[in-house]
Image (tube, rainbow, N blue to C red):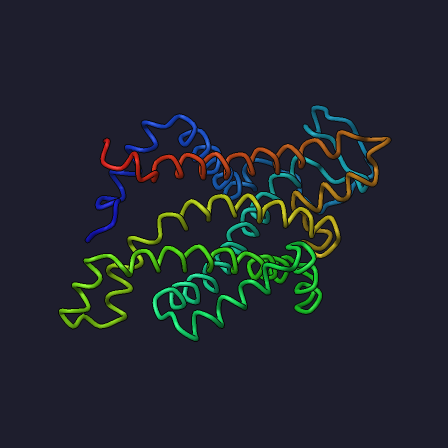
Length: 285
């Protein structure tokens, strides 16, 4: 049996054309990637260069004003975009690398291995996510990469649990039993039959986790565990703007809106994928 998406490129284009929400969310995320790549062309200000123009309001020289050290807010937002996107994808990537193989093997093998992995998943899920992320970051060391590895470790149990359930369902299908009867190797069964037919819920979950990772980066940077000064990220800008909220509240608006809109784009894309991959809709076009 083959995957639902036999022609990924044509199916993706058809989905984007037929779903306005997905098109808008995907377009916004592509725009962020282009913004990250073209940052030096978009603004001539350095994100770390300090001036004597402290907490200046938006104007012709500084479109979004300056922060408490006289740094251009627009430049910091633009240069902070790749940091925030990198944080999201790194955290989800780490979660997939850890969670997918363990969850899939637990669901496929069953027995004592499944029992051990399931207990490990339950143990990790019993900790509050942000507390576990802070603890792992403290053990690995302060910094954006280490912070997002910690968030990825927090995400891994959820991914492992979901793929385990899907693997258990798929491995009992007749086409998998037929592959067994023909003597197909286990690794070939997993790659050719289990993965393509169990991965769809994971794809949806990944888009939703990207939003969670973005918010986690903001939270950890707010606590001083993410991106370290003077380099910007949206979460770090939000944390610094919070200090001057009473005298310059506009400092929080732009990074806050950037986080909000990007999280909404991830969630909107995830909801559109959920609708697209709904088994009751498959085969209708």
